[in-house]
Image (cartoon, rainbow, N blue to C red; front, side, top):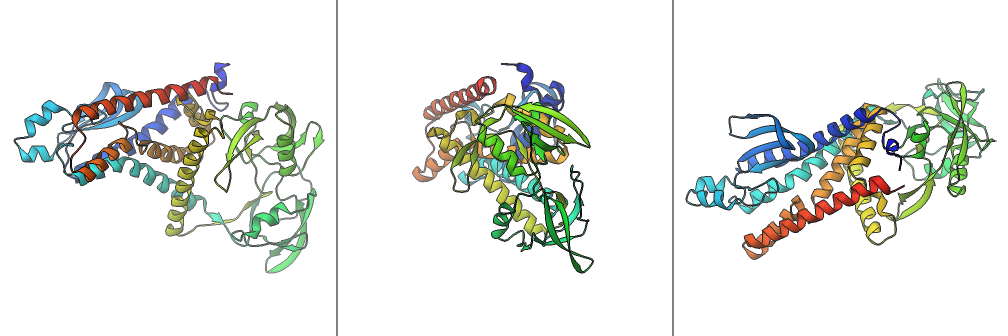
Length: 449
């Protein structure tokens, strides 16, 4: 394996590491702050709030007696509450024995607090991760806006098409004589898919209050609007704004033509001619097999080069209400959770490859690539990763938040917690499972294609 392939096309190793550390630090800080602040509200004292592990680089003690610190290894963090023996919230039996005679001190420990306080404190970490994701997704919608309905031209994209009749402000009401449905109507996707594949289409638009018909480029040209990390496209140097005008010397003008050539090539290398700001360059790349989620909850394996398309023009946008933006954020977070759970189920059953699990190298590579594509792309990635971290922490594995919640559920049913010896054994098993998963994910980074 070529180790340099792990370095994103945009930026070098230092950039990749910096982006990874920044993304992980934000997510960990939000997660641990959730534990800390809800624990404080619930009457549980925090001894240490640590961002990172290992040797302490900086620390200070606040007026409540909590030590805030930054450690040298930025691959996680923890809150050590009173009564905890370690970062995994194992019980410090000596410390707990010293508080048993003092009800006030006992109540301020993690293990002496009421069940509701412990449940709230543990659950707060993942909940704060989900809240971060929802807030980011909603903020992006508020800042970027949503496409205006009816579909309106906001600006023309640079394309190698000589005849451009559309103008900013045009409202598209029909294409080739067929009335265009609203962008939120169920028939919209079918309308776009049924467009005749001609280099030029006749757009009927409303302009300055009057209807007129003008010719312009095919609505979905082979335009690169975004490049996926860890893809053939990013390794080949494709950039947003590129237009692919030929595949293996055969001219194309529609994104579906490119899609058909990629999917029908059975993984064979493709020679692309790319139009970039008026110049043409030749690029050769090899599609990769990708497991993609489907609307029915399943997965389909397809050949992909790792680009997203776009319209021949920038749609005009409008700012939605805060409620609509939050609803969009909740829906996006829900889709990520649903897709992640479905993916894990399909990996367990063998329906898709376990190579879909990325380790620290893969995540670092994606971090660097997304950061290099702009602040919005990087912030969006942080939100996606925050959802994944929140979900992972809810797994019922001892040492994770989900494992603690299982213990608390047992206590709620039986009226007493699991005995300390059983907890120690289960925590050890949990730590072994987590370490094994990390090793497996790291091996995927190094050996999966």
